[in-house]
Length: 357
Image (cartoon, rainbow, N blue to C red):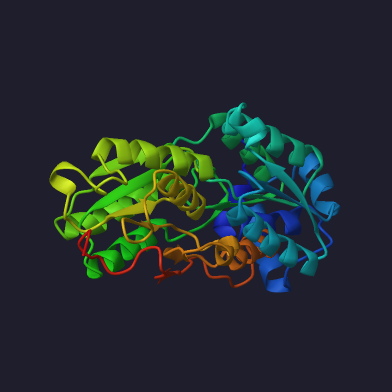
């Protein structure tokens, strides 16, 4: 059985991209000691270079492919800005593709595969997957990217991925959600509802798990967990469903067991859902934060234009994009592989108080 380039890279203790540059004749060669290590490993294992891979390695297109879900979403546009900034530093241009085709009329996994195949056909030097990963990775996507990586391409995914050879950039989705819920518990909140987003997506699922963990540690169970689309309309629809389920109305503000209790606190899996939730609450005549409080996740740049200010968990979105591009274009550089964030308390969710007080 033919020896794979990945085996040579593993034996030499370098990245797949570095092994490819050494053995396939790239103009961008690593340091002499690294080259010697790779060549020695190749000779020991009996590796024979692939002619197609050599042709790819010897020419760089100066292109990076970036896959996002919805470029109109400020979360993805901020990440894309960071990717572009770093790509220009490395003298690369960014090709952009979105998976939210016709508002979701086409399955996102099919759109992502089509984007990746297009990037491969353009012979991009690297591909960055910024759209939220599916819990079950599409095997067609894994195969396409696996072949791309074997031929010297580089792949970076935001969040954990099962794609062999791809680098992943960890985001604190569980930890951040737990920190946010914990901060609101400390403010006196005991009544929570969760707008979960699409639970087949790792980002949504991990954030809901983080919310649930913090609440469970405090002996609190959410009154409702409502899935929905990862957009403003999804937040709007899920909030109306939540209000109807819990019997919360503008007349008397609450009914049944929820009367004269602290206001409900809605935890949304991202900021755009939270903004949709606020619109839904106003449409029912409910006041924020007096009647219902709302918190989001991400701290998207456009929040400064909304009132009341949204309590959220801040991710450094542009920095995430910059780091993803650095991992893609300088795989042997010294990069951190983790990302921190912080809770930001604003007017939409603060100290809990009894309704009518």
